[in-house]
Length: 498
Image (cartoon, helix red, strand yellow):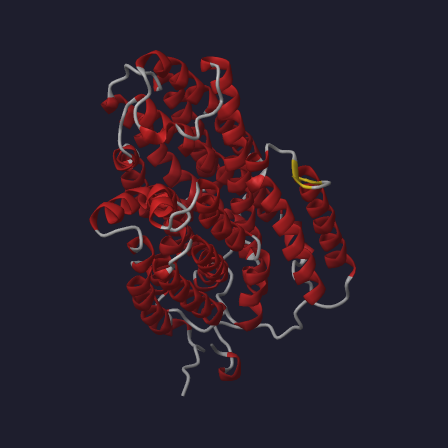
């Protein structure tokens, strides 16, 4: 007989949190780990670079596009149930990725892997919102937020180690035992929460999926088509424009329909939710766009290997993880608005420090200093943002809110990746006479080119600096948290349980 969580004392919030963090960490690693393996995969599967890069693009598309929908599915069917389904899909598709004999099969498996990740991600934030009281949520959100930052750094390091030790297939195979452990732990510790048996807005599902796909595809693949024609009269900008029109129709439909909307627009009446989702877009943009100039500088100017380059960011990961709980306690006791503002400004300061230090003759140990600054910044940014954004979120909209928040972060990441690629090419053309750096990963650049290349990479970092500064300005619009602690709703009838 299924257990019915009618008593809050039966729930172990921190056990549930660490269980969800395990799955969240695993799926976020897969957004970066494949980038290290691309050359090996290309050689092993006897394919070209364009086809190989689709293994990453397909995952990111399948991950980002359904987030609005999958967040709402958690409200409708229960976050625990949707999370477990997503974890199963992710594990099976990871196995299929490692067993793929062709690049075509790998791309298809990566699509299913991304969809599994999309099912899981909103549920992690939704469960945290619903099992932790608002005034106790800061520490939990700090751990959840730091996981997102640390995973992007661990991915390349872990990928390099696995490829060198046992082969590229194991960057996927390793997910299977982790997923099995995560599944067992989720069955034990993640509670069954209240569901809301409303009809699913199928027109909203279609409009949301089509609009998001067109916009994300256009932005993500625009550089590959030189922001021009894709096929016949169809151009990148036409695809993005049509996607925006479809998303506009989606918002209009959410406003006028009389049933249960996929995206309840009333959540945006909460000032802090609106400000937070706008701010997290700038964070996704800056964090994603920052890493590419740094990796190219470390490898092509300083001659480091991919794994050594990733290790240059270890201070960021270690300090972020170490400060997660202390900052979380500060969030619960103080005013997270100002902590978030400080964190975003510190991100800008860390990147400006990189801008100053990105020179061929800079000692490597000096380049660890901005990494450490960004570690403190990450601890003060992710947790406070998610905590204050979700503080007033109604329990029945936790899934929808989580979907919007994570979608905003992913769209920001896609925008950041596309923008920094174009800017790097532009600055390289200005400094060394060519913007074609796609084939430069074979080793260290000739000495006459290093200074100009380093200057171009440093100048490129000014873009994420400007965007994260905008995010810091947005945090000034946060309203104070109300001095109340709402109840935590954790009940559901056995018939609605996962």
